[in-house]
Image 1 (tube, one colour):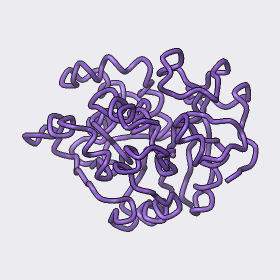
Image 2: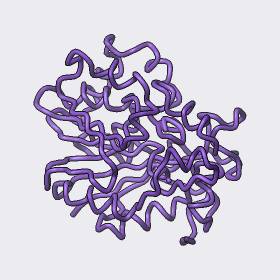
Image 3: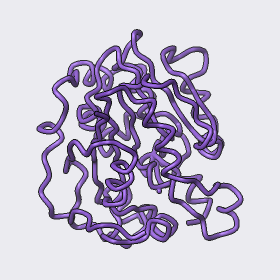
Image 4: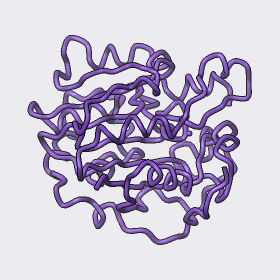
Length: 285
């Protein structure tokens, strides 16, 4: 994956992930992942009962949102993502590798003045997001948002301070080892287990983590698939979060696309914003 593709993917309002990550925004062999045809509960059926649908709808309808954000709503399906997250007023949440902050802003409106959103980026994400964060958060525009920029291994979070965390097309980037020299110069080698070891202690008992990401072929090596296509085998995601001490809680089929070719890059114009994706929820007991 060329760095130019990374820049394109995470420029403000086109990223926040491959839909939102340096892989679009916005990464070992593993057990078999669910097939694209596998049945999964709907986001509505699996969403935590505490989700405040009214607050989520009001956030999406908020006229203060940038026009560029509203143009992305149809393919981001943010209402269903935030319902699945169980978001409600007063919560303290983390947008992990938030890039330009599409989801950060929505979560800011939902959690309200009694809540808080941490918009976390590592230095490359912050750099490639350009002026996006400054425009979004400048002049105290979203006063309940705290911007944090730090290498993943240095991320400092208060113990048991978070009600929820969200990864939207960003978890796979923790596995990204660019094969080209340009990418190597811009993106550090990261340790997914180390990143989760920083996150999990910051979750309150009962807190949830939702992960949305592009599907790679079952059993594929994430180092290879992330560099080639910015996809990850869902079994790797499940394995990693369970190894970190979280319990697999639910999944949603809202982003599943059985016709997607899992060998294609997520930047391919024929599948851009239409890739087969999983949405998993994990819980801290």
